[in-house]
Length: 246
Image 1 (cartoon, rainbow, N blue to C red):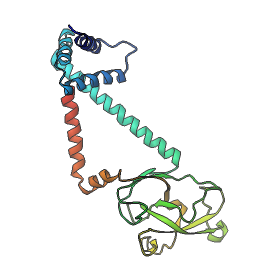
Image 2: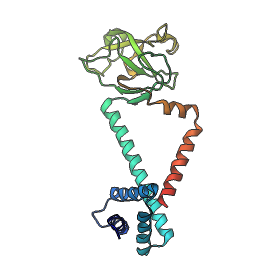
Image 3: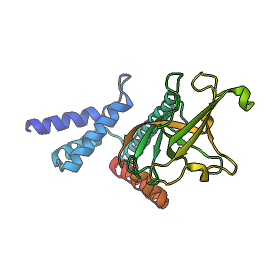
Image 4: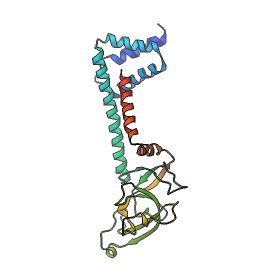
């Protein structure tokens, strides 16, 4: 038996041994990924060694397949949980309900194009309030899709003048009134605002654009255009997990 075959047998036996207290889910995922890569690479000796180790373990094939499937599902659940936690942390850090958005129109060209991915931050201070020239994403009461446009005018009033509480986002104790416009549009956004609305308020802002990643969001646009594609992708991933587990 050459060195490579001996290494393959050792890896297979180590993979099939009963886990002790020091084993983790990550160790199992790494071991399974190693075997899967060898199968894809066509390393027949490593595959045979793995199958032989599984046979020597004394576990019935049905039980082994079921345990492998459960292990894969647990791994997928762990990855999904990490992704959700990362999203929630991003929301807390940026003070934005949606810290990442995809541009769906060309109204901000040539600076921002359709399909670009935008990173937002809704934190403002007395030294960095929203001001003319900032690119912001905002929500409208009668629209479900946020809009990304540039602020072209800012008016500030005291709470006594407008008869309501001040905007508390930057701690300056003022009320901000914002007017926006798309760089590629002829007129301002008052035609987009709700009926009778002439200005945006600070509470309408989802976040200020801090970083642009070109074209990364085109996949999201395609999924919105063909909703059935989501189910096809989920089904394909599920089948792939089942096949690789076997």
